[in-house]
Image (tube, rainbow, N blue to C red):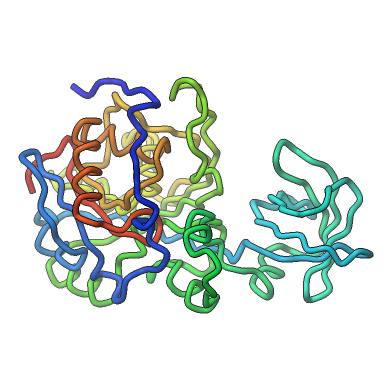
Length: 356
């Protein structure tokens, strides 16, 4: 039985040079740590067609990343203000802002295309701003790829290619009409067209879900206990064809393998299968935080990246394989010089470290 864990269980020491600042090429050549009950095997993501259980159902998150980072200037002073778009309701944007000068209500920021953003009020660490233009329209023109801050920090003064990041910080199966995420579902970054074709040829069925990833995915647990952590809210939707495929797989004893923690949270946020519709699909919002002990209802296995210390993503992995297996797996990955975080390598396991 999986036991509960403490915040300190989610800490580990990672040499800074193990933070991946760029992805490998091709995508599926990334390392893959296979976690089994007896130990670990060192593979590559391109080995998944031979590693996945026969007739497994693979579930991926097809959300697309919005170029949500932006740079503006203050009207009047010309001072630089950097920002990260979070969400929009009507003409009101919610953003995170960074400036050398003090920010206050009424300040007007201007994008390079002349569109203005007016600071209305501060809400916690974020700002509500008014803008007459839709965010996705502006950001597709002048926005930058929202590469996580720990990658930007590890890159230092190195010049980066925005076009490269725009392509590689996006999954090959992303639905560009659903560009609402401010972070990538990073496990999916390892899949390329060649791997998807081989998985299909091996009889591995792949179905999509959508969970729009928010900036809260990077927020560490800062509360004394895991239970006190305020989980961020994210929107999800699952089409009817995916619901039908999952129901068929579970009824026939086939295993459901999630690609990424966002796919897990989407599936585990679904209502009981008996309440699923016969048409129309399902959608909603979730604040689900998966932490031991947890009884997984739909997910039997997971392909995932190596995550930040003290993160809710680690609690999810611990709920699937146990905290001791998690600690051993991360120690093995560090010893094996795996690359960590969003552009890094991956691991694969079945729930509770079962055999492949």
